Image (cartoon, rainbow over all chains, first blue to last red; front, side, top):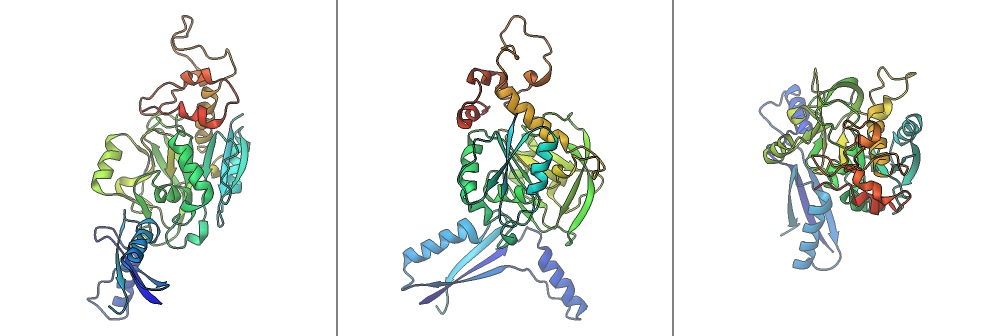
Length: 81
Length: 281
């Protein structure tokens, strides 16, 4: 079993209302100067080896479903490498 | 009578209201199920508001891959009228039937109000019964209706007259250019955040401005398949110079072919054959 992580983030030019809310909450907690952008992390458990084909499959999953590339970017990486 | 299908996804909220609005405005409502791949021969499809699949992942992202959507996407490509309301609009964007995406509103709260809108394009299947630049008031209620698209897409939408509705008085969600609704290149697919199905009944609606959406699609459907002999062909010598009623309706949005061409189809043909005729470009 191996773990592949897909990180999805809103594109820099896209407003991130959630990140903004968290940023403002941190200010209220007297933790200023921390600007947060909020994304999503997908942990995908892969049966067997993480082959290039597997990675391609996961990239496809990110493109089709996990991320909306109109507003988000994604990054695929094998955990522990 | 025009048969209008309304898809129910797990988590749809306004499917029953949409079905009721179709009935109240003189159409024949047909319930469609997300897990079925049959559109039951309907003349048009409405994707209703709500929270399909609990808005998990992103609004509309999972609904977009339901079996019925494969059929909706296929039929929309052949000209079937499709209206996405609120969550339905989100599904249409996720399905790439419409460009752009809808993100969380800049005010970061769920917002519910009677919203003033301008109808900026009457050149669609769902807005031909309105006057250009008509101001209407339709209820909206959403937390994620902030329309976003890149500059190039936005320029194209504006340049091609595909912004169908724009917010007036206030922008309730931070959408770019105050966009409330858009259409595809052929004008048969329209998505908007406000809820026309809630503005059809004088008992509970401050305005009846939602009726025009339904009248528009009925005019379109009826013009496609008129009772024989009711609409003169465009070339007919006794064709009135300013034809009225459904005969006058131009089916091809953005300057496409007139719907009256479709009368050769006769009545009761399978929807796909009829639908192909409406592709204006």
